[in-house]
Image (tube, rainbow, N blue to C red):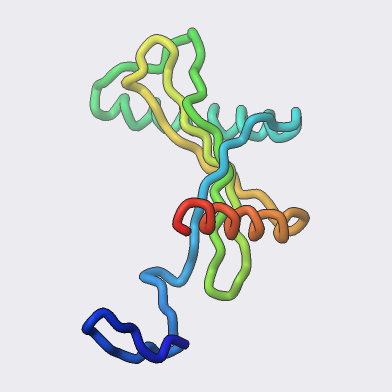
Length: 132
């Protein structure tokens, strides 16, 4: 607890520190994925493209090309809730190779339990490095 802060302004701080949200969230770039996970990503993208195709057919815009897609980014989204539990998902943003106006994102939930300590340490190190 900080009792006083000077510079011609004195006040006493309490010990209840609050955040605007009761959670912390960060994203970590993913450089490589296993074959099994890549198959899940490919399946999720195929399903998402079907939904997107249905949606764009209703508004009369372009369709996905046969040329495939470009992966724009792949990251791990880590959310630490106020109960100190981690929620993780892999986020993939992609676009059509021919018509990059067609793009979308998918989110695949993943189980963080085997890497919970490392992810929390990564978050703390990033906060300290970035803000202190």
